[in-house]
Amino acid sequence: MIVLGIETSCDETAAAVVRRDAGGRGTILSNLVRAQLAEHAPYGGVVPEIAARAHVAVLDRLVAKAMAEAGVRYADLGAVAATAGPGLVGGLVVGATTGKAVALAAGKPFVAVNHLEAHALTARLTDGLAFPYLALLVSGGHTQILEVRSVGDYARLGTTIDDALGEAFDKTAKLLGLPYPGGPAVERAAADGDPARFALPMPLHDRPGLDFSFAGLKTAVRLAAERAAPLSPRDVADLCASFQATVAAIVGRRAERALAGFRARRPGVEPVLVVAGGVAANGAIRAALAAAAAAGGGRLVAAPLALCGDNAAMVAWAGAERLALGLTDPLDAPIRPRWPLDAAAAPVHGGGRLGARA
Ligand code: KG4
Ligand code: ZN
Image: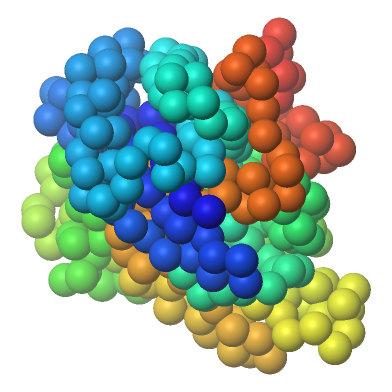
């Protein structure tokens, strides 16, 4: 089964072709990502309207190139999958409409993919992981811990009550004068810094549960930066190192707790923690999660760097997993800018007209 995947939910335009064999093993045949860094850099963040236009400008050629690199014809496809949410509405319209058009023209089924599900299932593509497992999704828009039970069956165990972790990295970078995107810049600066110089708070640290909060931490970094101003490169490095060490400790503690809960609920099942999303590229966070997994008698499965950030291989794979179960979507399937994976979990904040923000 060969599936074309399309991803346009934020600021990466991506197209990929993935094969899933009858035994459930996946192979990436092509995987193209075009980031829109230059377009958004002057604004220090993603501008939705610019993102949507940039997707329109390149997506058709990117799809053609992904198909050519994979060496498959449209007639060889089992389905066309596109991210239908959650994400920025303009980009979702571009990707889903393109996916539906290709599906219609090729006479193939369409699969509307949830971007978070695609991140959560990536470990099955890369490592052939069996259900159930825990997944920590950490990106610019999301921070959540899920129990992944089967395709389409997710229990959200914890989420952020304010900022996403990637957003906290991006905002910290911005206030310290580092370039966008902030995560890699903070990690680079932190490499030469002293993580013990600034004592930063760990919000919700001693409270039970698996929710996260990063807004207070961001404020603490700002206050520490104001006290130390004017900032030398050493100050910036020390602030980045202290921030990164603090979030790694927070995430590690939550992971330990999630693994302990998993072991209690599912005796006899090896506790596996998957980390996915752009922030999963961070070395300090990976190390904290690996330590937590080892302490909990389990193991950490981290996506290869190329599959941590947004990409279309994960969308094609989620499409293939759904197709294998007969879960395809009609051509009038809606896009869903807000689309929680676990519909039963209560909205944590921002229960607006369009649904929960987080
Ligand atoms: O998954 P992703 O590519 O896009 C979505 O938000 O869905 O994640 C992007 C986020 C950005 O906030 C970026 O700053 C963060 O991931 N990020 C990192 C690192 N690389 C990317 N954060 C910390 N350390 C990194 N090395
Ligand atoms: Zn993502």
